[in-house]
Amino acid sequence: MSLKPVSYSEFERFVKETNYVTDAEKYGWSIVQTDVYNFKTVPNASWRKPDGVHKVSSGKLPVTQVSYNDALAYCKWSKQRLPNYNEYWNIVKKDTRIIVSDNKLPISDIDKVNIVGNVWDITDNENDALVRLAGGSLF
Image (cartoon, rainbow, N blue to C red; front, side, top):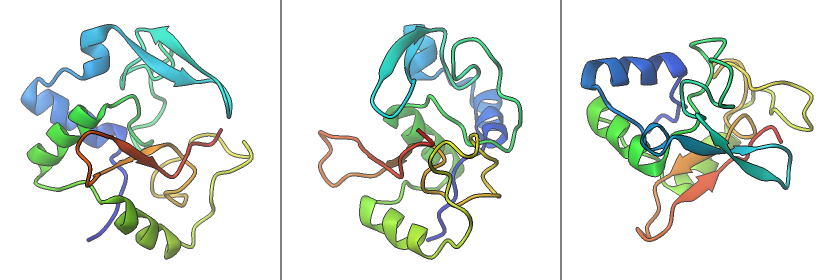
């Protein structure tokens, strides 16, 4: 299985072709990480405006502000699946590109940095009652 984050452009194509509305768009808000330990609820934050204000600057950035439901809908449309947590870490270990850490780089294009550390990634979980994130974010 190849592991590749979904870019903003790829997710945008999915939304345009299916008229999909994300959970954040339905709710009118999402949670934004402000630093390593703090999060806040932000009105209008969604995949289109991850911080609730600014549009995404590059189609090559990883899509953010998507829920587990949104990820599953994308996977169904793209005929792919989420990696499980162990698959995620096994693939990440082989990725020799730079890891975004210590706030030294902003969120980066998906083809330029190691998957881990750029943004939180959603993995499939054997326990359907929980969503398991992996990788962490640049915070």
